[in-house]
Image (cartoon, rainbow, N blue to C red; front, top):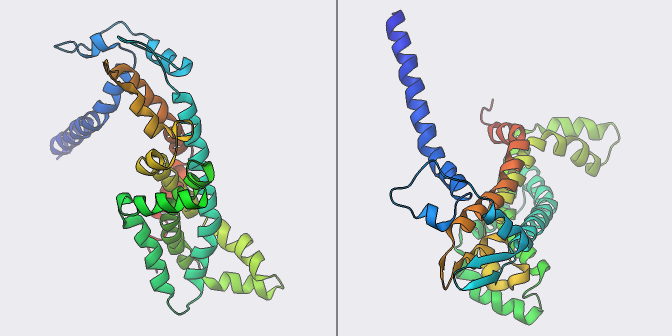
Length: 285
């Protein structure tokens, strides 16, 4: 029995190691590429040992991309700043609108309530190309084309359905008797909502906000069409590394590392809320 249990532990350990290596290998390889130039990256066969260089990161930070055809001006750091501003503002607006709406759908039953909720959810399912052309025409008529507010408004439409449906489930899991008891003590509906319901659903709200931030951060199509170069996020700014003289693989790898770092740090910081929020309500009764 001891030998079989030991063999099982060894097998599980080896299997988990192989799985981790399989999924982490692309990330590690991109990280290594960010410290190499194109000649080192395209070398055949590839080498694990190489002389690292910081030239890719220096090019991104300085905005000077050195190519075979000469120097090229890039605005990657500006694009990175735009991603932070656009995604943060969109999630904040979506939370401001989505959390009260989720509470209303969870606590009050009204005519066409489920139809309205499902219609909002359908915005998340619709492919971006379906609404891109009419949205672009409307934005030109309203003067919202190539504006931060216009992009934020589109981004929050991406985040709002996700926040609405996730947070709604957490509010439904909270017993309304707690809020009724609090209101019987003489407190208003708004106080019961802000002091009882929202804190109890806090992990779920944090999880929904984090997932929405990642979805907004990764969006590409809307910002590509609706914004100019000085307002585009990092997902669109990465196109600058595909030049007429070739593809700058080292700069692309460095850009991936820098663009992934904010969301990775945010996920690591909020991982406790993310795990707790996604598991909240998994067991009922």
